[in-house]
Image (cartoon, rainbow, N blue to C red):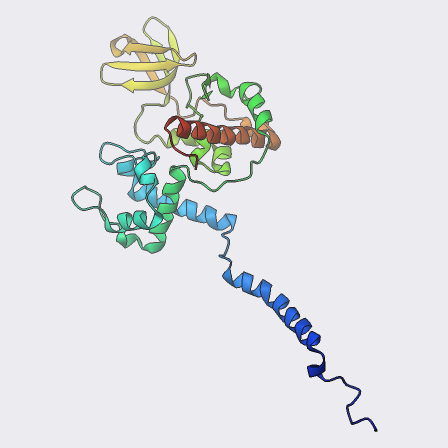
Length: 296
């Protein structure tokens, strides 16, 4: 018998395995497409930073006057950053509290801010609560520790994890609610920290000259019309009567050295920041264990 036209081309029905190969190839092509359609979009670092900044601005303008800049509460509103009950609220509940307020408690409604700003402020509250996304440390914490207690002289004024001086801020959990860039700016531009204290002279650097010629340099911890409580650089407290003072001068600059940006290399700054971040994480973990709370 002669070959029929097209007889040299095998019939697909005669080769079921060809169908299987074609099917597998199609599935293989579709899997990446399906994954890309079902995987939730990742937010870029720049998008997260933008949300953080927006939330910080909204919080400072609308919330800080009652709850404090750090969310730890004030005379007119409770602590919403450190209170475990508020920390456990889901984002949806916080969103409605901010938007609708809480009647009869003094908490007003902020629905006029709009959904985007309310979401941003809820996101920033999570930062104040210490629920920041884990970030890769920019440097080496061990080298940073050596800098903190050595070349950087940070421990002369600051205490961290129970070691160091007392004139400066306790830095044990300082990095918990701050980004790497915020910490870097605080180290290299310390003057901005003084400006943020507002109109109050309390907690500002001060130079005091007594009538007997004695001079004190330190931080004004308390002051009224008759007295001044001053903490000098050695950590000692001095209770001074204003009737015995010749002159008080409040300094516009921080007691913290302003030349870390030039005396420390970029790598050394990264190492120092990494030490602060890692110590804050460890301190938070220890605090959770002491309170009987599971680590986040």
